[in-house]
Length: 274
Image (cartoon, rainbow, N blue to C red):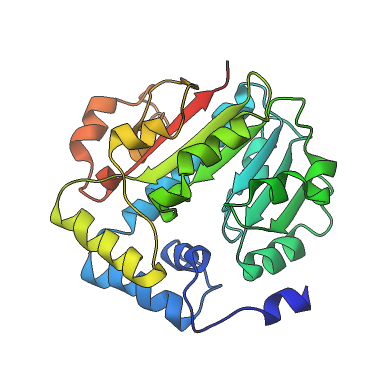
């Protein structure tokens, strides 16, 4: 674990650590906070992108678990926070198993320290673009049974891949290797064709040298021939929102009217392999 942390380059920003900062975490450096502060101070309200994305992920994991899925692979998982995937899943299945994958060595160190005594989770450091390395990793292979339904999670990660890196092919690589009734969750920055989109995308590309925000059609296309589950691709805040206490099912139309421009810039979808 010490070897992992010594490889951290504190002069370069990390996607995982920027998200950590935006979500109120403390596992980040000045270079990460500089990017985070741009969104907090120069684009007021934009932190809603990170928070609405996280809440949609929590609801999606719960939905997958209710559908009977007991094992998950979380791509680009980021730093541990409240309501991690394994915690949400285990509210429905005490034996749920989760493999967390991230390329940041700090994620590896913190995740392993947090989950050291949990034999139903693993955290590996790997590159999203090298799926065979993840699939064949001994820790993943020992934990995840790819002959049984798997929940594959791409939460706020595919927009960090350029078109030339063929993110749709990456999703298909995984769906080709999981059985029927497996589910794939994707959340993704969406092009809003407005000034907010332009500034936010420009900052991310300038900071990380990669990534692209995509249209609704392009995001849906990432899921290929999978069956898109209700409510389809929608803004994260509209993806199966929790009922208002005492009022029953949430009124989607009312929520939609209240969305900020920032909440409109990230969408999510859950799909099932027939």
